Image (cartoon, rainbow, N blue to C red; front, side, top):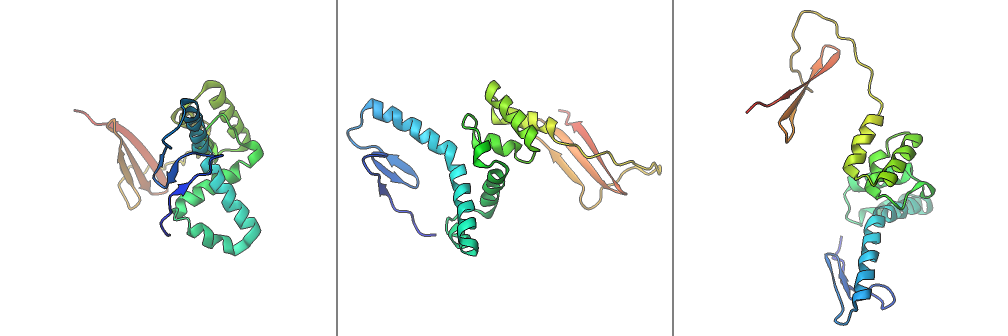
Length: 191
């Protein structure tokens, strides 16, 4: 991907100089115009994820295989593109909410549509942060049915695929995987 040049914005849109890493205001900028630009920039920040995904979807629909080349030239990571697309596909334009961020939509995208709507309604009405919405969504996700463990008298043992994780609070999660069952143990690190 080439270097993106600085762009002098047209007077009717954003005054000043835009670069890939910043904005330089023009010398004569009223407080009112400066404040309005803050609102514009914030709206752009909330919208750019949707714009990117819709751009990719439009290219996919209109240009078939050729769209992949243009997407590749954006310089965005494949995972970023896949993430934007999965959220946009889960939320066609008519289901998107202006009052919550793209990240709120991303948080509930993997849930069934009724749960998505219920949780986004809650996020709107309660002004939930993305973190708080994640907690709510975790309760809405279906949990796998427990696998019966056959008591053979043998203690569980670590095998390939077992995981040990310790979070910032010192909570340790050990997942033993083997003999047809997964056992998760949580423990707290003592001082």
